[in-house]
Image (cartoon, rainbow, N blue to C red; front, top):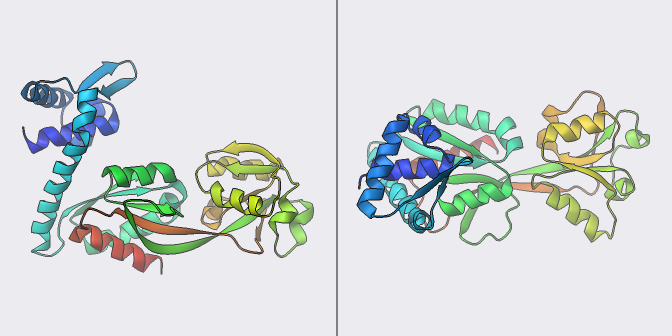
Length: 289
């Protein structure tokens, strides 16, 4: 078997499609199919099943997945170690991130990193907190931005930034004239909840006070919550990082006492950090000082 076959295997798993795997690897669909056919023939097992929803791993494919990821990871380490002997000039960093961070912070980090390391390829995988944490654990990404991951077994974390939560209200809301707001003041208001992972701290704050949250709806998209607030449907508590997306006609108030989400970079504990990943972490730390 060849390293390219294993890379194709992972690309098909990631995309769920031979066509999309080819696009990811800049290879033809026929080339992808041929590579997988040869690999299946060599191993003597069927690795994928095809249905109308795409391509899925067989039980046999599931059994070799972790080993393939290990092999590809170590091959990348070899290339990056070779690059490190000449300085960090090349390689690939696969980064996991959640949407609000991707939209407002990642562009600056990527721009600064590429100005120093133009030969390094940066690949961004975007998902919610749980998905990013899972990708780190599975080796899909080299490093991931997380918020309040807790004591995640198998992960080492690098603290980066404290992002305060704020209350957002319709423009004519009766609480608009207060300098700050407590969660007690918001407990009886129709509440609009983000369902992306960042709501955990907010829910915990209400529960610790013994308060019942008058939840009216949940939405996964920041823009949906902000539009609903602007329309007067209810109030919400959101990370301040989301505020650049906020409509003009809403009111933003700090919380008292404050609630913070702690943004960190997570890496897999059992894997040594390659020079190029270490350089990316250092750039992120500088950007978020």
